Amino acid sequence: MWISSEEIFETVRMIEMEHLDVRTVTLGINLLDCAGSSDVKTVATRVYDKVVRTAGGLAAVVKEVSDDFGIPIVNRRISVTPVAYVAAATDAKDYTPIAEALDRAAEVAGVDFLGGFSALVHKGVNPCDDVLISSIPNALAATQRVCASVNCASTRAGINMDAIVRMGEIVVESAWRSADQGGIYCGRLVVFANVPEDNPFMAGAMHGIGEAEACINVGVSGPGVVRATLDRLGRDCDLGEVAEAIKRTSFKITRTGELVGREVSRRMNVRFGIVDLSLAPTPARGDSVAEILESMGLERCGTHGSTAALALLNDAVKKGGAMASSYVGGLSGAFIPVSEDSAMVDAAECGAISLDKLEAMTAVCSVGLDMVAVPGDTTPETIAAIMADEMAIGVVNGKTTGVRIIPVPGRQAGDRVQYGGLLGEAIVMPVNRFSSAGFVRRKGRIPAPIQSLTN
Image 1 (cartoon, helix red, strand yellow):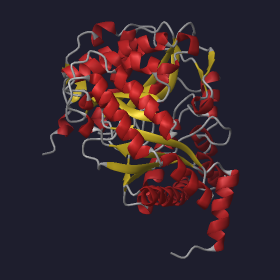
Image 2 (spheres, one colour; image 1 turned 180 degrees about the vertical axis):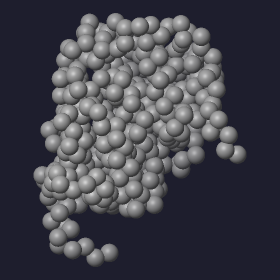
Image 3 (cartoon, helix red, strand yellow; image 1 turned 45 degrees about the vertical axis):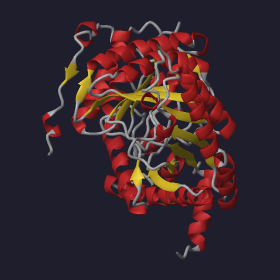
Image 4 (cartoon, one colour; image 1 turned 60 degrees about the horizontal axis):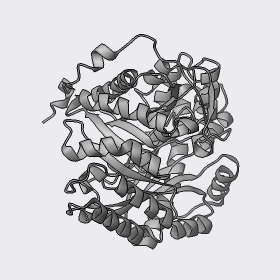
C-alpha cells in the first residue's frame, strides 16, 4: 500500500502533539488446560507456568514494535479464561491463591494489568461462581495487577438481581479493605451486562471460551487527535460535517492500531484477534473525551445536549473504525471514565455533570458508569440499585454496559480523591438520598426483554 509523505507527517503530528497512542496491546491466554485438579495450589502452579510461558516475550516484542514504528504503546496487558471456570474442579473455598499466581506471572511478564478473575452469572450462580465472587476482596487485597469482573445481566437472560445485590456488598467490602487508599481496590473491579469476551481494556478484560488458544487484541485511543481535528474544523460547520471529520480521524487511528497489533501478533507467532475502537482518555490535558464534546459547542460536558453529542461521537468512531478493520470487537466506542478524564473531573467539580446525567450518557456510549467515586457511607443496597439501573440500560438496548464505582471511605460529596497514574483523580459525586433497599432486596431475576426473542 502506497503511503504519501503528507500522511506520514500527519501521523507524526498526531503522535507528537495530539496524544495519539495505542492504549493497550493485550495478550489473551486460554487457561482451560490448567483445570482439572481438586487442589487449588496445583491449579495455581499450572496457571503461573502457562502465563509465564505464553507471555514471556510480550513486553520485549511490544517495545520493539513501538520503537520500530515510532508509535507509543502505553500498556501491555494479559487477559485469561474466567477463573471461575478454571478453578471449578477444585475443592477450594477461596480462589485467592490463583489470583496471587496470576499476579506473580504478570510481574514476570512485565505487564501492567491482568484481567480474568471473573465469573459469568447472568442467569445463575454456580458453586464455583459463588467462591470466586466471595474471593474478590481478598484477591484484590493480595495483588497489584489482577482485575476482577462479574457479568450479572444479558439481553438474553435478563438481570440476575441475586448477583447484583451480592456485588453491591462486594464493592463496599473491597472499598473498605483499601480505605487508606481511597477505596482503590474497586478500580480493579467491574460489573457488566452483555460482557464482551475479547475486551482488551481493564478492568473487564477476559479471554472468552470461544477465543483462540492465544491471541493479540489491541485497544486504540486518540481523544486528543479527534479534539484537534474538530478545533481545526472550526465552529461554522454543521454536525453532519463534524461526524464526517470524526469518521475520517477514527479510520486513521484504527489503521494505526491494527498495524501495531498485527505486527506484535506476527513476531509472537500468535493469532491476531480484534481492534477495540474505543476513545480512551487519560488524565492528561488535551487527551479528553469530555473536551471533544465541548469542542462541538457545549460549554461544559454534562449540560443539555451532552447525550446527543456523545451519541454522534460514538457512532462516528464506530463507522470510521469499521471501515479501517474487518476485525473489530471489545467495547468499541467512547469511554467516559470520570477520574481518568481531566475535563470530566472539572465538570463534576463545577456541578455540570451528575450521576444521573452520566447514567443517561451511558445509554449511547460503550462502557457505562466508569471510575465514579461516591460517598463512603453509600449503602450496598444503593450501590446495587445503581448497578441494576445500568444493567437495565444494557439489557434493553442490547449493548454492553458496566459499573466501576468506588465508595470512598471517610469522604463526602464534593471531596477530591487522588489515585495517580492512569486512574487520575476523582470528585466524590452525591447519590440520591432515598432508599432503594426494598426493591433490590426482593432479589430474583428480572426477565429478559421481549426483543431477546430473536430466534
